[in-house]
Length: 377
Ligand code: SF4
Image 1 (tube, rainbow, N blue to C red):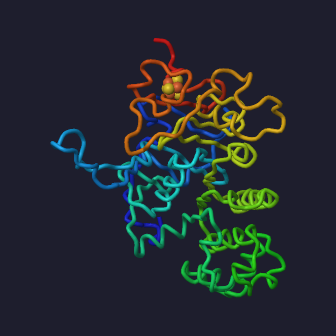
Image 2 (image 1 turned 60 degrees about the vertical axis):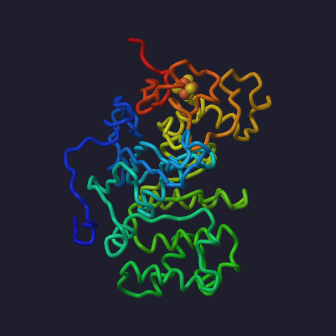
Image 3 (image 1 turned 120 degrees about the horizontal axis):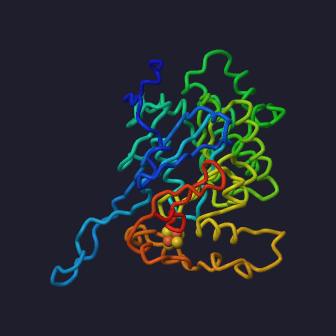
């Protein structure tokens, strides 16, 4: 590691990665590659990542009975493990409130974590602002869902990009670097955009400026939190194609946060599914979206608009699609499998025992945290 990459890091050579430490201890191989193909290098990984937010104390009941007055916490993320690899896109999919954006903020070191590790090239990283945080940001950048809110409305594109270049220690001509950034995100000719304010740009152009600003740091990892969900449908594809182009040309490791599992199939190499703060399924995107194993993933897919599906959602597509109801409260989440109150296939043990990850066995690296896939003893 170079000096700027020290980051209060503690070397953890020789420890197993998440492939060996799936929840419940089940052997899990979260590899994007088909058998026999070497997977690209892991750049950033989370191992057992946990985040609980303190949300005050419960109401005190008369007589002091029950849980009244006790500290309560919102269990936003529980025991999440993932790997981001060079030149690969990993989609993290789930409905609102599932914890996926919190995972991205934890990986960006914007929140302190309650438990687990974040490793950059195998080294545990735990930064709390200052020089170490800036050094980490140089390597791990994040873009946000609302590009308008993430750009200062009183400053031009020139200001946003040159500021990023200066902060991250760019040497050489700022003017040339500014133009290169705009070209890289396909805002051409650059002169047309350099002097514009955020309100003079379309949503897609603002998101491209936000991406250009992130690229100003020359990161290895880009955490893209719902990068297209606030854009018109007609321009979403252009931004996703841009991210794919950057992944290939710059060999970025990209985490793509989305609630749209259909776009994950199109855009991502691997897909991970989150429900109520926990990871429930993972594998290569084609397998997870075409052969979903977890009942919640099936629900997500059946809920996605599909012009090829002639029948209404839930009609004639099996009992798995009948899951209804709302996501649970994360202050007092269901015991056992957190999906069990909504799961039409729930077994008795699902109410009390949290399922570990089980290998599905249909494709390498495909797993689900569901008791239905437990091998008979
Ligand atoms: Fe349904 Fe049980 Fe599987 Fe959870 S573990 S998804 S409740 S079958």
